[in-house]
Amino acid sequence: MRKHKLLSKKRPEKRLLLSFKKKAGRGSGGRITVRHRGGGVKRLFRVIDFGEEKMNIPAKVIAIEYDPNRSSFICLLEYQDGEKRYRICPKDIKIGESIICAESAEIKNGNRIRLKNIPVGTQVYNIEIEPGKGGRFIRGAGTTARVLAHENGFTNLVLPSSEVRRISENCFASIGQVSYPEHKFITVGKAGRSRLLRRRPTVRGTAMNPVDHPHGGGEGRTTRGLKHPKTPWGKPALGVKTRKKKWTEKFIIQRRKKK
Image 1 (cartoon, rainbow, N blue to C red):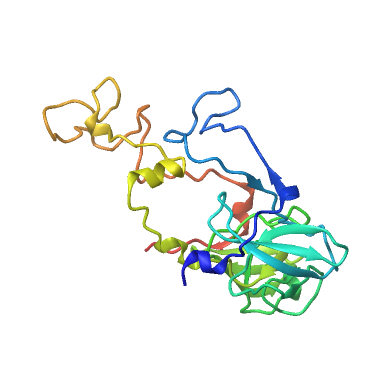
Image 2: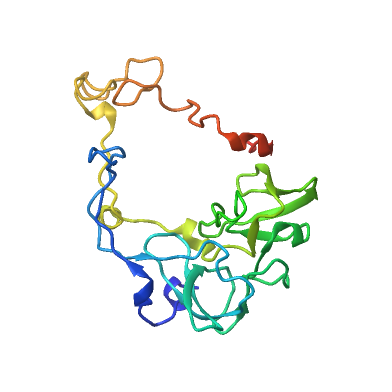
């Protein structure tokens, strides 16, 4: 099914839109911290509800919309008290369906429940890491985790990377899979589309001069002349561990499997 056929033919909810000044990969000091970012089309930020602020209040899906700031679709919910909010859209949900966020509820696509009340084998997304902090991971298009077991106050989850991780059973998660799994099959096709997505051109280090990159210099297509590849600043690249020691590592039961 083509992407535009899934979406509602309505303009975004005006009260849930924000505008920000473009930073184009720059840090708080104004210097470029992430290269190859800049330009692109104008876009407004949609305020998404990742948490559980509207507990025990049923909501009706009134629209499914495109969000330029994320790979998945978003759905507009209208609660019984009249308030409207955006939520990450689950796969196969339809306009007019009702969903709810509660301690325990029906195991239904889109409902948000505490992990301890979700049966083993259920697919979940938009999962909290700490109770009350809102959904932090499994939010990209087509992603989903699976409940593996409940033990000693924790829930074991199998993540899309094949990693098995423990999460507090008091954390919330949404039932189902994130919408638009076809996103991974998109072909950019041309340089102009990358520029619209704020991606600027990337130049190979071997095409530069020695003063600009450790791989630069030489006549024609010469080898880089180094034992290991390096970044423009001389730091090791490719195959180097980039994950820093984090306090959450103690919750990893099984590391991801290498492909």
